[in-house]
Every structure is written in C-alpha cells, then in structure tokens.
Image 1 (cartoon, rainbow, N blue to C red):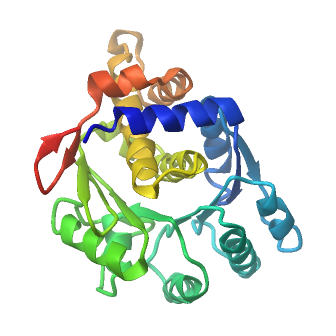
Image 2: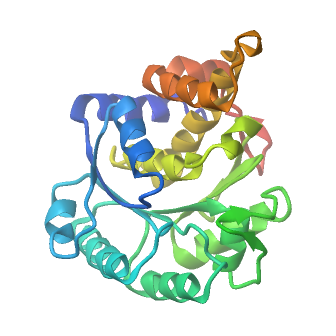
Length: 279
C-alpha cells in the first residue's frame, strides 16, 4: 500500500473546499494554529464561548480541542462542542496537553472520553502514558519520556480501547488505529524548541480529518507536514547571518504555506511497523 494517493485526495479536498476548522484551544498558541491552518488552505475559527460552540461546530468540518489553558468555562465548552460534533458526524481531534501534570486535567479527560468519541488523540509520550492510566513524569506540559520506549504498544492498546487513532509525537512519531501501526521519522530538534508545534500538529490533523477520509491517514499526513516542514525550515537557516530559532519559525511557516505532495514524495519517511516498509 502506498499513501501518495490517499494524501493527494486529502490535499485536493482541502484546496477545493477550504474547510472550516473549529478550535477550542490554548491562548498561548491560538494565533500560530490559526495561521498554520490558513497557510495550508483551511479556514480556522477560535470560538470557546459555551453558548455558541454548538452553533459554530455545526458550520465546521472538524473540531480541534486543546486543553493547554484549561479552565471551567472551557471544560463546559469542550463537552458541548464535542457532543454536537459527534451528533453531526464531524471529526474530533483531542490534544490532552499536560495530561498527568494535574488532577484537574486527569479527571476532566477521563470524564470527557466517557461522553465524547474522538477521531484522533494526539499527544506526547508522557501524556499518552497518563492516558493509559500509568504514572508519567511531566515537566510542565513537556514530555520526559520518549516515544521510542514502548510507544508502539501504548498507541495500539489505547487505539483499541478508545476506538480511535492515537498519534504520539516525539523524535519518532507513532500512529496507530489498533489494527496497524506506523512510525514517522521526519522532523528536526528545533521543532521542540519553539512553543506550539504540537498544538499546530493537532490543527493539521484536524484540517486533514476534514477531508472525510480515514483518521489514520489524516494523522499521518498532518504529522508528516510538520516534520518535513521542520526539516525544510532548518535547511534554509543561514548561521552566517545570525539566524536562529526566530528565523527557523519564519522558515517553518514559509514551508507550511508552500507544502505540496512533492515534499512528501521527496522527504517522507513513514514506516509500517508490521512489515517495516517505507511508504
């Protein structure tokens, strides 16, 4: 199986329909997520008022829920929007930022998952270990665990239990729907040194989910776009001109806006774990 055709179909649907992606997200990274979705051809909206989220999600093609700046008002909005999206068949992407760092986050996500069915859950290894019910070490909202240490089994087990696609991001990304598991070996360490790349990755997954295809392909493409764009951005840095992380972020958004299927064909490193085939 090759993924080029599946990815091309997702790209074509994004470009032709410019889908509305409803976010209830972190105020730390809302601007980056909005601009990134715009750069790839989607239309973002950041609406978290409880009284309007059901109406807003009714207009959207996907819903992205990010608990980075969690509060009681947002918790109510998450539930109302998520339930409405489920009722309408609109894909839901959950980003459980900082899960495991506080009891509030742990209890909320546990309750949320009894009431809302996500299509994709994306997080770092510590967050996913916490989601599985095991203690995990967190440093703020950052992971202290590696996706290469048991990530395959955790992703597969969670996907089977929660009946959704699980995407664990790290040095090597792990994506599983319970039936098949993939590794994505794209990216650059600079991506972990600027705030919001994880949040933006979830937005990309939501944008790809809006195409209506299988969530696992949306997760694979969304994470590939981030990883490959990170590689392209780093390759364009000019240390002789004093360019560092600030310039890297500018180049990263340039790469988002110019991303094409050709970039995936030239740089994509997706491996199906069972067969170790590169796709």
